[in-house]
Length: 276
Ligand SMILES: [Zn+2]
Image 1 (cartoon, rainbow, N blue to C red):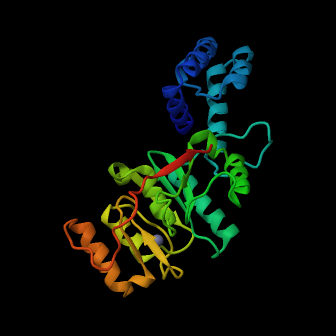
Image 2: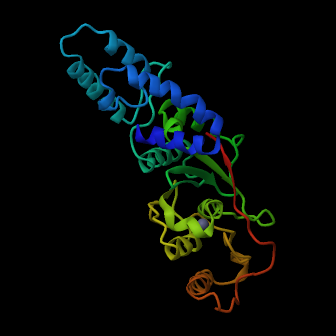
Image 3: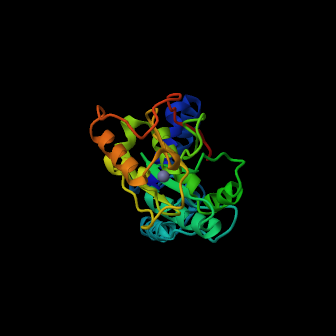
């Protein structure tokens, strides 16, 4: 319920017309309810009318009981009920993201590494070199999100490449670039369907981004590009461990000389689209 309001607040913040359209009706319903002071919440429209016309001797207690029943059903993470009323996802954004990672892992296997992250209660989804609504599996994922009411509680963004001139825009870095360097400290969840590579690990660790991706070695990486700088590494540039060390030192001290990496190319620019 709070998540629903939060997403609603996001939207009304950028759409004054919606705000003036929504609130008078909600206030009117609240005013006519005998349990107005009990904060029936944002989904009380149809139920509220029944409570108000009920002839029970204890309408307030009755309303409370209904409210408890409804809240407990919303706490469930899966909504298997009717298609005409899918309730907003009742858990946290991180809960929703973790469920989507599991879903993607089951569907995609090891073939593609997807990343799901949470920043400021918004969900970010991508894979290596980014995704759009037209990318394979996104149609099924959209259904999964909607069937669980996740889109009713949170905004969902899809991230694209941040360095269009380079291949190997790793999924984790697509998320960081989309969020922006100044905001990566506000990422509260990030998990991939497969292990992160050493370069991504170094960056995520440097910025203190929580990463609950599986342990283990990442699949073979041809290359890697920095989400905020014109800096890239790759198998053709020399010893892998030495390159990771160079990146780690550079992150700690930007005056570190880059010997193995490449610093040419265009500056990266994060990109994302509001999907749901
Ligand atoms: Zn990586």
